Structures are given as C-alpha cells and as structure tokens.
Image (cartoon, rainbow, N blue to C red):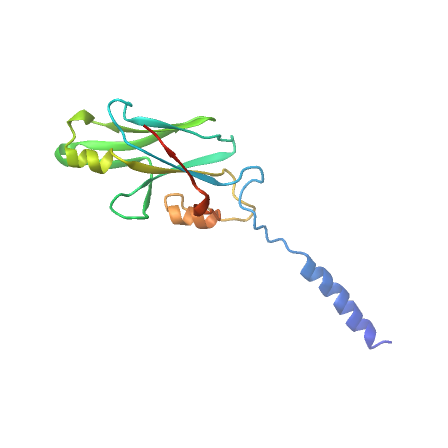
Length: 170
C-alpha cells in the first residue's frame, strides 16, 4: 500500500496542474468583437470629396481605417495619410467618426478640381477603404499590436477577411 500512495498522490496533483489553464485566447475586452467593412467610391466635388459609412460603433471600439494601395493588389495603408504631389501640393486622406458613422474624406492645400486626370484616377476615383473595429483594451497579458500594419491587426484579432461586407457609395 505504501508503494501506491506516492503514485496516487502524484496522479491527483497532476490532475490539477493540467486542468488549470490561464491561457486567455480571447482578444479584447469581452463585449466588443472585431469586425471589418469595406467601402468603395469616388471622391468628387459633388460629394464634397467625402463619403459616409454607416456602422454601429461601440464606445469600447477603436476605429482603424485603411486605404487599399492601388499600386499593389493587397496592400493596405493606415489613414490619415498624406501624399506629396508635384509643385508642393499635398493631398490628405482623413476620417471622422461618431457612434453611427465613419466619414472618409480628402483635404488638400490646393483646389482639388485642378488635379490632372492621372492624379484623379490614382487618388480620387474608385478608392477602397477598409473600416476595422477592434476592442479598445487588449486581452490580459497581451502585447500591443502595430495598428499601422494591416496584416498584423488581422492576425492579432483573428479577423476573417472572407466575411467582410462591402458598401458602394456614390
């Protein structure tokens, strides 16, 4: 009997060691789930070089907006973003949001109606943006994610790009 007591004690203790797992695989604050939505459209003088995306934003969400780089098929750039054009001209992509909407717009230090047709094509026509809502507080013990790196955000929050809804404006 004395030989079996240490083995039984070891088995009993190991049961508790392996049943306790403090690995928290949930990223976020528990009440906000990451989600994404694509919006595409063209910036024109008629729409004030802006468009609005209706989306329900919780007060515990962080809103990240990325612009698809037209030069690369799957490259995303975090906005705000400034492009330096010829002649000292600057074109900015910016965004504002409230609890119901995200507004994406362009600003410039020049009259945007004077842009060349190639500039309009590259910077204003058929632009695609991805609005990403993620929890404001990361999981316990989680390290910060580089939000400027779209792929790092997708990986960190385990986002499913196949479930993205798309909104076409104007």
